[in-house]
Length: 435
Ligand code: HAM
Image (tube, rainbow, N blue to C red; front, side):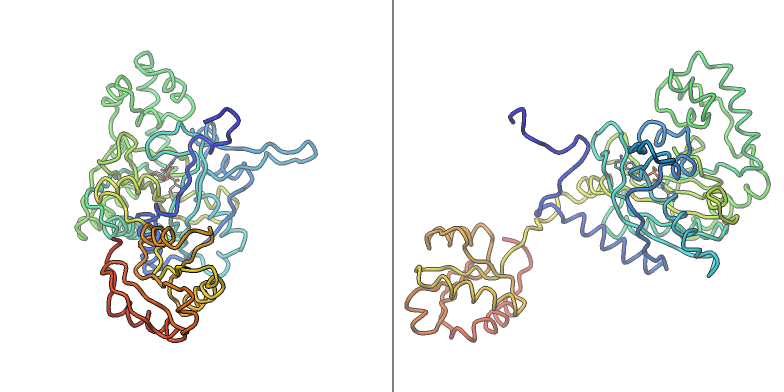
């Protein structure tokens, strides 16, 4: 690659025409199930005021502090700049409030699909532009709703063929009971501060719960000594958590309780969960979610409890590759390649290709002035099922010579009847796979 060649930005990916197999399966499955479960699609802009995330996701989170792409405001603007959205939850809540949907009906369920942006260190399945498929249910604190979101996510993974995904569950309590736990964790960790990594010593004062899920060995040792949050929950939070677990057990959803699971976003209350996949390396979360009962109010709305999740598309695609193998080739495959045997047939070939497409038949023809032999090679490479061979004789007799590319048989049909004959042939000879 020469020095002045322009390449894609680190941590971003192109998706080429043959690479959509697992992606399409995941999206089609997710959309179908989202709607089956009563979630309506909401699309919000990719750019938002940065302060939506400063306030919503949390000023001291890694996402906002280190990873958010912010376009600074112009000198005459009094905003805090514009952010490329790092996640979908605050935008959905903003959109819900901005359209005053709570005045029509408070309880509403939304889903979204789209790109998110975080300046993370790129690694396997972790990108700077990635995609999420998410849901947000606004207006109920029922633990059955938490359970519903978990069933939905697990169902999506099950239906795309992932059998090895694992659910980890925790609760973080609420604004009443959490401060006691936070104070206790802080007190204990301060005593052992010299055993913590540099990042965690900083987290200790700014966002102490993040110390609990630090992956460094030394920190993990220290954290083992911290009592689990369940010892500090108030009665209502404890009951909520028990009711969710009972609902999961009733439906046969396996889970592991992980009292170190705190998630990297500030809005969570009570339930938090992650779905992990063992086949994708260290950053193994393919979905993260939980309850956020204070966010609507924090963003200027009424007090409305919510719960939701987001599936990471790229990590999930990796998991699909690990479990299911490579995806099928999605590059377009013509049913018919129209080969020009002689120059005089050029216009006729072009016209016939359009006619085939009008009849719903995938058709392609040559635009590169190739010889007849070379056009046949292209037809072969594109994996065309049939070729039309058209030269002076076919023009004169108003016919088309059709060739079955797999079997090698050839037969003539009248030109006007060609599309219909192809339709019939394709019905009689359904293709199950690409050759
Ligand atoms: P999150 O845990 O930050 O939660 O992201 C959810 C999922 O998105 C992760 O489990 C991971 O699979 C994927 N993900 C995150 N960052 C990247 C990245 N840089 N590259 C590829 N995939 C990534 C949220 O975003 C919350 N908004 C989820 C939620 C919705 N909570 C309640 N409602």
